[in-house]
Length: 492
Image 1 (cartoon, rainbow, N blue to C red):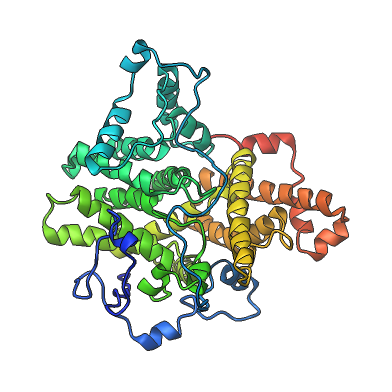
Image 2 (cartoon, one colour):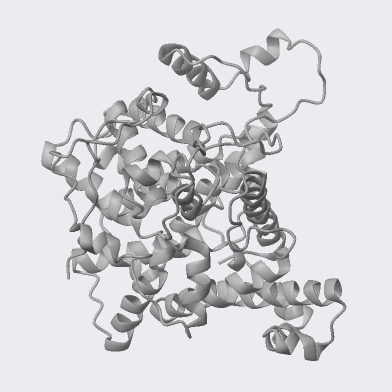
């Protein structure tokens, strides 16, 4: 069963803003491109999130809240620019020094080669070096290397790793994994082209986004690596599968604006027009990645058809992360498992499993240890509520889950775990019944119980109130012994 996608073309009668075309990653894909086929307009008009859901299906309703496609046009509302979202100034790129004085010559001589390359690459591209990176001490470099030795552990702390690498977690981690698999030699990748590509990918993530930034991409890449090491996949995946899986994870949210698809559609954003309201963000992430691949010439030494095929498969993986198609993929996955007909010697089936692995990696935060999971929950809630603030400011309908007055972090997380995360990871556990799967489901149960407990404290509600809201069973299930908790926190 081959996985095929019909993708929208660039409408020739709708001009793209000049500031978009001037971006280095904004490669113009013409309608004659062999990569993109034109769908039937009637199919687009009927799509509404790629699948029609029964109104009684609570899981589908929750997914629709996260990623529904409803076309609204607000006349006179101009799309905000790439860096116009006034988030709190969260600087993921610098590690503050203890002293503010001038840097000594000895420390300058210890400047990392990466920082020298990053600086020179900016100069070559004419990009101003506004925020110079602080110099890393050798102790931090050593600790980062020690962490990479344990990169396959599920309790890997990506926040600590990002600090130790001076905000370069995505570049450092992805390059290490590609090199560890020997993919540079297998595909004869030019090391400097690869390094430049990864630097540009990291720079194209918006560091001011609380959640959808390069640290999230690095976390998803690390999770993807854990899944690809699972016995069923480790013995079946080809070198091409490994390369595509890691690159898709690293670029799956490239140039994310920090708002969701319904926001782009109802504000008449140029991206919504460009992709005709169909998987708007995912199409943009993919084509931004393709733009950087072509700019750096990372695959330029491969035969032209092989390069195009790599780009298509990369797109197929990234498009699978569209939350509005969650039930479509989950239903297909469940059918395969019920019929026991998955054959990983088939390229199409391996690709489908990579899609499911990337979907799991993208939303695996609730399955991490509580200390990590809670940080991600706080960041994604901050991003949701900030979008709601923008919508209120411009007198737009506030998107579901984005109103800080009617939603709490506890309610959002419990709903997300119940209707999105649990169904997906339950099926992944059926496919790969390993210690890692058991650990993830264990953490999920404990984290959900923790949010239920926090919700009870916040509302001052009784167990009966929680039961009425569907949280009591989880709360009771979470009453595990300290020994059980420690076992769940062990490294997989």
